[in-house]
Length: 390
Image (cartoon, rainbow, N blue to C red):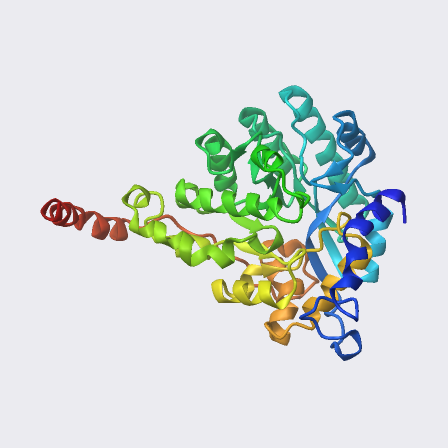
C-alpha cells in the first residue's frame, strides 16, 4: 500500500477502532455475528480513478489533498485487487472532485479528453470489470457539451460524472441548460458527486471538507435541480446521488414545504417529493443503519446502488462498508442482492451475464397536459381567494 493510500487510511480507516470495541461502527453487528458478505458479482457505481497525468495536474495546481484527504496512489491493478477481494464484478469509474477545470477552458477540455480516453481504454483492456462515467469541463458549458457527446457517442461511456458545484455554481443553474438538454435527449445517466464549494472553505471549521461539506454540496445541488425546474424540463436524465444523497433523505419533508411557495409551482408541478423520489442513491460512506433507514423511508430499494468511494476510501474501509451493509437489518436479503447488483443492471444492462434477467429502468416524463390543465384551472380561484384574504 503506497504513501497516498496510507495517508487516506490515517484519516479514515485508522479511526474505525475508536468507534467501538470491535472496530465496527457502534450500531453494527460484531464481526463474528455478521452474516456472510454480500453475494459476489456486485457492481460498484462510486469508484474513482487517478491516472498519473491527472494526479500530476492536481499537484501542479498545488492540490495534494481532496477535501482534506491526501491523494491516494491508484492503479488499475489496485482497483482489480479491490474488486476481487470484495466480490465485485464491475467498477464504474469516475474522476473525483475537484474535476478538471482550474480556470482555463482549453486546458480543462484537454484534460477531460485525456481522462475519458484513459477510462475508455481501461474498459476495453479489462472488459466487464470496468465501466466509466466521463468527466466534462464545467463550468465551460459549450466545451462540456462537446466532450459529453464525444464521450457518450464515440467512447461509449456509461454516463457522466458531474460535480454538484462548479466554480461556485450549482447544478440546476440555467448556464448548464444546454448540457442538460443534450443529456436528456440521450437519456443519459449522471453520477452527481460533491465538490468543495468556495463558501465551505471560508467557514473555518475544524472538520475537513469530506466529513461535512461534501454532503452539503450534494444536498444543495439536488434541491436546486428540483426547484430550478431542471428535473421537470429534462426528465429523461437519470441521476445517481453520491453518499446516500447527503442530507437530502433526512431533509426531504422539510424541502417538500416548497410546494406551498407559489414561485416553485411551475418548476416542480408534480410536487417536490415526486422529484426527490426519482433520484438514485449510492451507499458509499453511508452503509450504517441510521442512513439506510431514512433512505428506505424515502425511496424504493430499487433506487439504491452499492458504492465504495475507492481509493479515497482505502481497502480496509471498503471492507468495513461491505460488512456493515451485509449486516443491515434495514434491507431484506432480496433488497441487498438488488443493491449489490440488480438495481445497477437496470441502469447499465450491458454488465448482465448472458441470459440474466434485467428490469431496465424506464425514463420519467414531464408534467402531462391533463395535469397541467387541472393545475391551471385552479389558478384564478387561488388568486381570488388570496385577494379576498388580503
